Length: 640
Image (tube, rainbow, N blue to C red; front, side, top):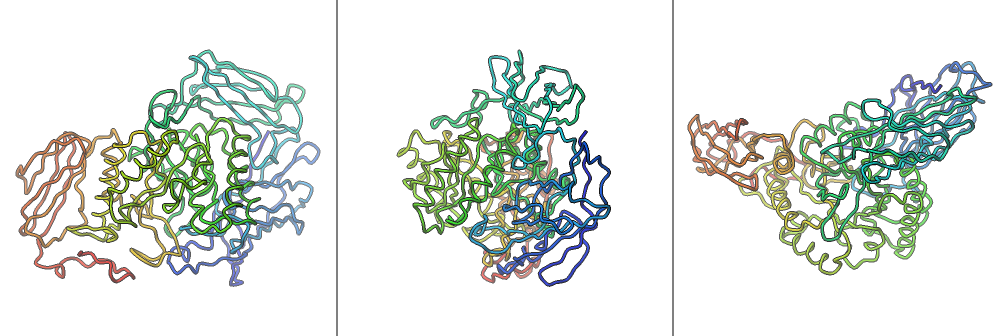
């Protein structure tokens, strides 16, 4: 049966400076310089080498494969001096068979290249393209009769469940090197609910519990075996969910024929000081924070994410928008790369219940010159997706300056826009006008917001927040408006906050902190939940809580200060220095109190059984307040 051998330790890494050091996988050489601004992080070709003994295997009956989960952006792999494969695209799985090259002692060499070029995406975008072997590497030992390992990095099995009355029809398609296939379907308790045999078999389930998002993310398991003369030689367990979905241009998203408004976030995978080289525990933490806020959808931008995170989305019930890094600029020499990355994205993620749509591109009109070639490439990709996977719909994210009549916005099945009206452009009210105008012009075209947001830094504050000041207070005010805005347009098929977490964008030098995008609702290190996080939690989560905003803005000049509270309880009572100050009942989850400020006061918010406290101090001038971390952008101040 199948065996795996982890290859994470003992690598020798030779960087662009010619120095060789020992590293462990996952690893990136841009974990620091890709996060400090200047758009000068190291891009080029580096080398990883690993000496390893031959694994124990039977050359007559078994094969040995190398498996890489993610190498950014291009990889050339050799074993004992012999080239075994090359791969373009930094976010997907690829493999190579190596058993015929193995000796008693072996040398694995991987040349990794994240250089600037005109053929491998991404090349232009507002995030850092970390170079390195930043996901797992392993040897896979299989019997010669096994599920195919050479099928675009897929597992070799497709499971397609289709609801049918109270039950379901489950089609299981397998690619095997030889042998017969036996399939067993089980529920979450391990009870058998269906069996079948063959490489393309359809199994009927009389009753099938629906995978219904965060409300009931119920998963079955497809256990598939390759058998030779009745004996199993390979097996895989594939989780799957039975669900249907559709988008109505007037009523939004439906899951299992029930209205299911999609509200959530986009996510980048990097971390402070680590870049993309993160652990499963960090994926777990990210998902826990997304779930705590009450999201029911995640846009996994702007590339294929780790398989483990898609697994988490299945288990947590997150509806997923998955996309390729075809972004910011159409490169005529990169057409082949967009096609290969799209094929890998679909084949490697086909079985995930969470994924409902494939994203073709993001903000592609920003700097594209050859519009005809770009439009043709989009049509090719859209047709390709429908051919490979007719069970899901296509989408794309349009740039703010891409008008509603632009041809690129009308190729995919649905469309969303990245709009920052009220941040980059003055006038929050413009969001209502834009949404209404598009819906008026194209009433049969489903519309969403794929990105919206405002920079917010937890060390910048103001009693009079305004656009572009990067304060936590303006970010919260912006999102308060957007929550109400989307409620006025219930026909939108999805809305995704940009972004769940702050992330690195080394080209950034202006505003906030160089090298960083601070539109996240949680800081880059995941240690601080900004006030806006709690606004969405108040609107989306069933977990009862109360939160006093602007706690970090503890020292203030005004005689009367604003105390803002978020809660999903209907009534909040404010206590000041142990005495009842005021009580409010609100439906919008935003409670505001004007409190006299003299000296030092202790404020407590009480909502049902939940309590939160904060302390504020009156100071005579801003100079008396605490000193904040300085920004390299001098016009940005704590006091505005």
